[in-house]
Length: 350
Image (cartoon, rainbow, N blue to C red):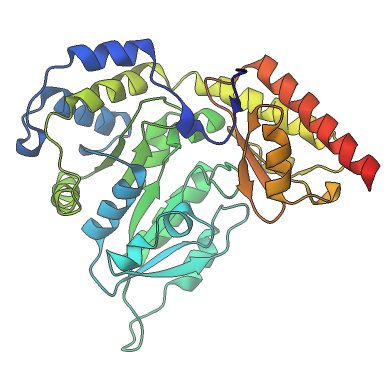
């Protein structure tokens, strides 16, 4: 059977041979007691990588963002965030259902917030208002198209927040993609924020795990909330070992994913009936619209699968494709040929 070209997400990446070998040979202990040497090594490495005092291994980015919100806020507080951000859109309403905080939304430009809009959104003390406590930024921004927040903007956001007494959290699930796109050390992105979360299991190819990093006090609070949520693990070094390889060996190669995404985006933009906002193709994601073909997202994805290509749906007429280490230049050429054929067939039938 012909293998699928899977462009649904970089979460489909499989661990490397180096990761598998590291998992087999990892020294282990009880992480809930702080006794797993491989976890301890990963947490120290990850914190150093993003310029923070301490790190915490969590099973997922969703849990990482949630324990960060819990550690920064109390029930009834307000969190300011971009209206299409992952923490709101894809994390099952946990900031309200579990953390008990109220989101206050700001519309960004392709997901990038304007510091002045944040300044305007921070309301003064009033008996009728929730207390604004936290500003959350997503970089790269998924629904913005994988877009990157410039350093000057993220720095200004943190300055405005600090001036008004608010804390800041960075949902940096793909922070290493942002660093590659900006051509900077990842510390430069993370440093202004009070806390940061990043994933090991997306483009970095580890099978599971994310990291939360910040001050030692913050991480200890987050560690307790991790336990409360059922995220305390025992011999978690088998997970951490792959994470160490991910951080040490997999960050530089992300530039290749970005090149292939750009190649894909430009190719799609040249196909009649397909619309691509090329200004958003900054990292490893390509969002495009098929309304011009007279198709909805589901119909187009079904047509793709007939050619053994998988993509994500963004209804009613949007499609997302994500490049990763299992996608080759030859795969991109094939996908462009397939989309061109589908487009031609449907335009001719209109």
